[in-house]
Length: 422
Image (spheres, rainbow, N blue to C red):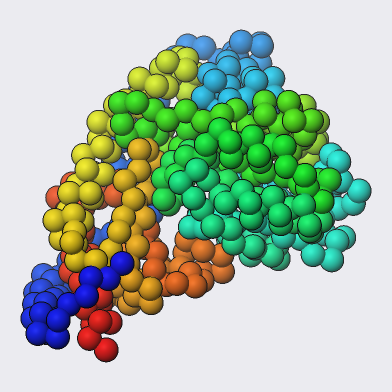
């Protein structure tokens, strides 16, 4: 990655980088690029939700949404998101506002109960492991660490996880029980799984009969271009391959409407849905159906979701364009960084020279620019190359984002040139 400089040229650029950093720290900034939260302007697009539902308290199946019951969620809301998430409405569950909560519960129930196709509870087995495509989502890794599930890193490619590696690991080791996947505009590199990757995931031979794909389709509708990316239907592919119980599909409206008051979804085979509903019946008497009805009245149908997300795109696209523009202006041609150009989602991956990511983040923090900790994109917080930094452009205002990116570039130049000078 690094461009070779003569000793005199290196001395000159390093001196300039040190002066730029001194000027940066003197500005007293307080900027934050840590998490992919919707900006207030995005949340404002769903303000109408707070005035709903209007004069209706009964769902399409006759459920009084003000009362207990309806554990699977409102049928009309499941119809809306069935198309979005590629899950038949009858096999979809609508829950509270957090899909991460559903992932947590699925792990707990697999540990303490018996999955369809399993011979025993996971907790009774000596070792449980998950495959973790890297770079990946830190909260997936945190769940595994919380429950003592071993994590096995798998390299990501432009078409999804390296399937040669995945197929070998799952075929050889019965303790490998699952894989984390963010299949569209993945967190953090924006990769989209190819049809071939989906087909191989669905049909591969697994030593564990209770192997599960945790398909976190968090960015199913979060496009940044006029031509949305479409991915293959994993649930249908698993069914066709004779592995109908393999996929757990997760989704959420949290980055569609209001993050603090969205609706989370779980989709799978009939057997898996019955399994989860059976466990959920012991922990809840039903979800917030009033909020679900709000979403039905606000979004109306799948086309309503798409139209709403076009308004979201109008707010997000300029921020991602700013990332590309500023990184190119500040770091292009230096050999000190490469970065992704995602077609959707919420993140950009910045790669700096090996051994530099933690120091870049530290220098940025000292200058008042908060970044996600280096290593968060890898299991146990350990990026073996110390090279990946996740950028979350969504929440800051455009002027704040531009300041933060310019400051981050200063830190990358300083740390990169210091490393070359050693």
